[in-house]
Image 1 (cartoon, helix red, strand yellow):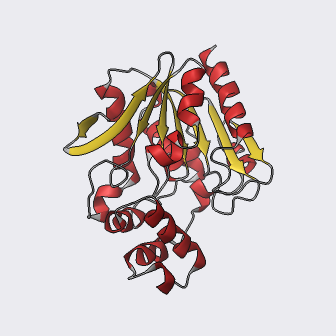
Image 2 (image 1 turned 90 degrees about the vertical axis):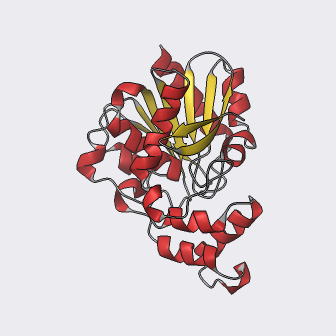
Length: 251
């Protein structure tokens, strides 16, 4: 995969297909491969006649690992994404993020709305404003001697996921300590690009999609029946809603 330097940090990315550009930003402890390739998103979007960029966030996947929490503020990761557009000489894209990637995408939309044709926030809805919490517990779980020694069920799940995906647990612990920044209701009310919000009905991490949509002018919400934070990612109805939204913003 190609790489580029984002203010001195080496960022790995995928670039496939031709047509209107979609930039994909994955969730915490995941990667472009796990979040977007393995779930069929990249192939679905390419087959629909679109060009896909998918980034490995700093500290994740094949991108450079950093161990200072200050290097994982959401604003810095949003800048990485925007610099990737610069690197490939793209003026604009629809930006889609899942979970932490949705937070990064929202920050990018506020930082540079002129670079976005549209914004898709998946796997993080009202919790973008209300907060997710538990970051320190997850960090401690990642640093624990073993997954079995972690008592917090949610934190242990992140530890197991990181092990399954081959993540650098020290880098991920640094990331989780800095990357769960929230936006205020006033902040999200300033998002000025077409916005789609998608969350699973049973997603206890994301919060309500309709509740966030009520705060973002002109946005729309989709709730995926019976899906939780993990099962919503590759859901067929999720993909159908996104493809319909992409058709609209391209019209």
